[in-house]
Image (cartoon, rainbow, N blue to C red; front, side):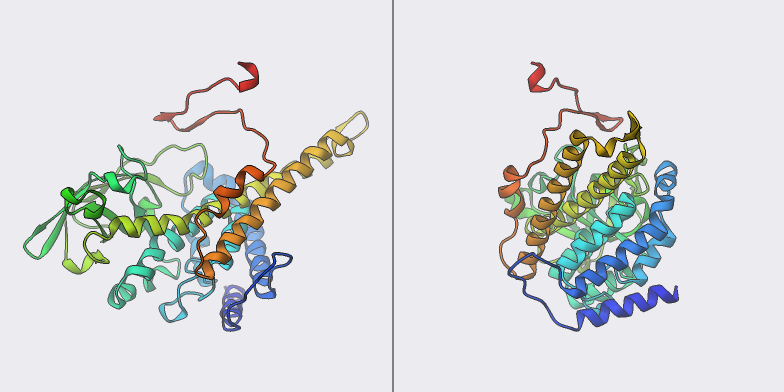
Length: 372
């Protein structure tokens, strides 16, 4: 723990060096290189050895999450005054990638708490809300979740069926949120509900809901194909009464809050995918060195070398795009379309394999186009 505290102090001191301005992506600044190495060392030492067991047992890595909190990684962009590390979004993307490389589930937990839970409160919350709903969630002792999706509308915030009505001075929420990451282990949720159906998406508001709380219940954990140490389940709201100060932002701002939060969250999702992809490449390269055929490692075969090179090129291209999106966000420039607009130029091979997300929602198998 002493080493973790020293590392966290180092992160804070790096943050005090000021913001950097990169015009090229040739090399990360020294601060970010040190952060990357710190996260990589932690993932290799504390997460990679137990990642498979955590996944098999659907077990939340509570101790490791607390250690990440001690490093400041549960609140990377959160100001130091509120208990965070006070770093930038590039640092956040780097941290999520390296943690996901060791354990994809822990990477998701880290990402959701940073961008989907703390993110909207930091941007739209009052000072009182920040003190109550941000500071306790920076240490790893508590994590939050983000409740937008519903059984009938996915991430379409404009079609929210969950409703919130005024009853005297209180708001009363009713509805069901679906596929809510971290909800079994969360101590609070950002919940979106319709407060005026006649205004359509402009009649949606956001609320801060403590957990547990009267009227709040959880559905069964989804039996996913992976990332199972991070819980995913329905969040059920039945006559949940909240005080007026629980509303995040102004009435009708929910759609705006959701869209801006999801924009930032996509950088974290990209970083998670990078970490998982890098771990897969590491395994593939290691296997190619150890697997022999015709008296030599298959890594000596040119076809295998080409495949590994293509994988490495695709990962590095995606990494640079992700970092660029993060830096544009740090510079307060438009970043939402950076990755989608450039994705067609990347050398990703076509994927012709289909599987299922969970037992209840199968994706039908289809023949590849070349077999049609």
